[in-house]
Structures are given as C-alpha cells and as structure tokens.
Length: 238
Image (tube, rainbow, N blue to C red):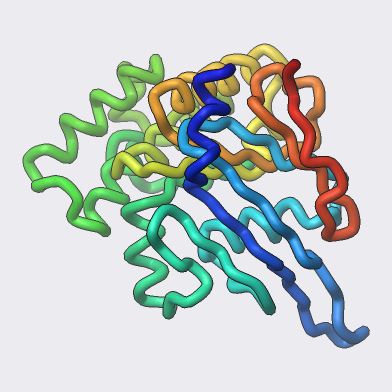
C-alpha cells in the first residue's frame, strides 16, 4: 500500500473546516461539524460510521450534490464550495463518478445505454465512440454479455458492476461510493471491493462511505465519523 500512500503530499481532495447544518421544524440540526480531511491521488479511503454519523452528508458535499454551511472543499484544482449549480453539474459529470447503494440504473434503458448516459450528457466522447467505450467497460467488469439487457434482468451484483461502469464512463479522477455493498451478499461484496481496489491501483481516488468494518483490509485508510465529527482518521492497514 506504500504506492497509494505516497501521493498524499499533494492531496486530490482537501476539506477545511467543513460544516453542514440543516434547518428543520425542530430547529437547526448539525450533520457535520468542522471536518478537516485530505485524500491523495490513488487512495482507497473508507468513511466509516453508524447511521446518522454524517457519512452520506460528507459524500454529498464532496460530490457537490449538497453545499456546505461553512468551510472549503477542493478537488484537484476545483473549489467545489464556490461553484454555482450549473458549473457544479458540469464539473461533477466530467470529474466525479458516483456509485449508489441502490444502483439507480434507469430501468427503461439497456445496461449499455445506462453506461453511455454520462457520455451523452457531458459530450466527453464523440457519439461514434460511446457505445464501444460502454461495451469495453462492461467487458472489463465481467458483464459484457449483459450489455443489451434491461437492468431488471441482472442480479444485484451485476447491476452494481453496471453502476460502476457508468461511474467510470467519463474517466473521472474521483470515484465516490455510498454504501455500495449494502445490498449485496458477502461474496458479491468482495468482488465489488476488488473492483474498487483495481480502480485505485489504476490511479483513481476512491472514497467510500460504509458501515462494514470487515471490508477494512481493502482500504489504505479509514476515517471514522461520529455525530458529524471526525473521531478516528486511522490507517486500515499496518
């Protein structure tokens, strides 16, 4: 893991004093409080914590899905916290791949069409190259033979592989996953984690929110959240 830890001197991700407060009928609710975090290029990092600890909020802020109440978020050269909604959408589409717990594949599109969708939205590849790229990604992930099926015809593990292919469609530098193994059996979860580890070895930065500590051997580092605060920025491996 030394190769993954070495690039941290120049972090791809930097969070400084990041807080998030939500207004509700019951008053102000603090989801994150004064979080500092750095993640280097090529790292596979776990954000660990119980339900309500702030994991999903941190993921949403990191990807620009939500905005911080206070603090600064930088990914590569982009000051994410300062972008407007239109600029955020463009940045996210080109620079960030997101993998969700419930896959979120569009049921009316084939698997290949789902993978092509980010390329269609962002125009990152010429139209003639999009389907071949989608087929190539699906083949790399071991489900090339499922390309022209609808998502409902696939198993949960196959759908998650398709979701990872979609997240990689625009060749982002950052891959973010929110509980991606939460709906998978243990064997399939191991397969999916091996895919994320391979992405990190290929140079992508992978940040994953999870409550499954038994997957810790895959991570270069783990960062534990409790009540919206970082309590354990520890190493997952010796």
